[in-house]
Length: 136
Image (cartoon, rainbow, N blue to C red):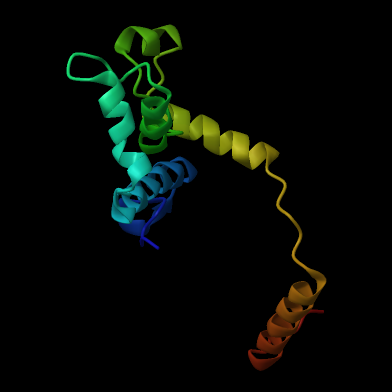
């Protein structure tokens, strides 16, 4: 866990859009920390032999498969400027706010299992009793 996700102004302010941006950065950092898998499949020796020294790799299914795995981003738009402008030219902050609003308006969390709800209620009631905050 990275401390400070979603925080602005030295932690005085919390921002949902900033939380989404920070989450995207943390996801990318986690991907890098995982390292690069080195296997027969990822080394693509067969593809290299097939393409040869004067061929290209862009149209190969293998390239597409492994390139996408490394480069997917939900918040960061890496399209060429013209394509980005054609799609509205929204910057990262604008997209993050739109996504935050979408999540807040549409997300339906799964309910906690009954046993968890009961245990949380017991903890709250114990604390209320201990600190004289008993409900009326």
